[in-house]
Image 1 (tube, chains in turn red, blue):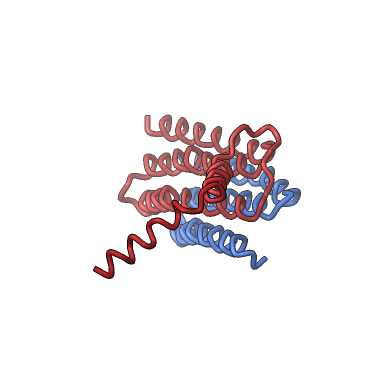
Image 2: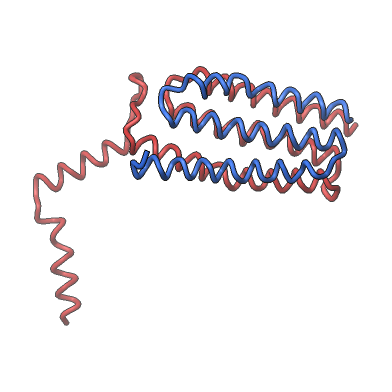
Length: 135
Length: 86
């Protein structure tokens, strides 16, 4: 019974890992690839580690290490994906031409348009804060 | 049960081949770092399952170090890229 559960969990995890690897190989864009990599680790690695925990028991040597690795990956992988996506955007890696939304560029453009149209609103908090400090 | 562990370890290690193609062919550095990050996670899982197959507890620490230091490597690469030191 336990063996069936282990095989099912490992097969599900391996299928997700395979789809993530194919996605990293086939996706057109570094941002899509980051998404595939993140799905690959969350949905592909965790079922395999849970399979090891189920097969060995959570307090055994291998089960406890698998649990530790699973928690580490779950905490650490979104941070790494976020940092990589941010670095890719800041270094100007081009998006896929079929991409439909770039909300960071829209926000920056809106802020630039607001400061270019009326320079007074950004300067408003400064004097107010200095006046409050003077009082 | 041991045979299952060995089969899953081999299958997870075999998934590193398409990622290696992406590491070789990635147009930018970010593509290569993403593929390397996924590869090191696969390596950690394969090492952990092989440790469970072979009954060697010392390989578990290899998996822990791989999974934690791949994260550190990705963070360091992204910091270097972001500050344009590369």
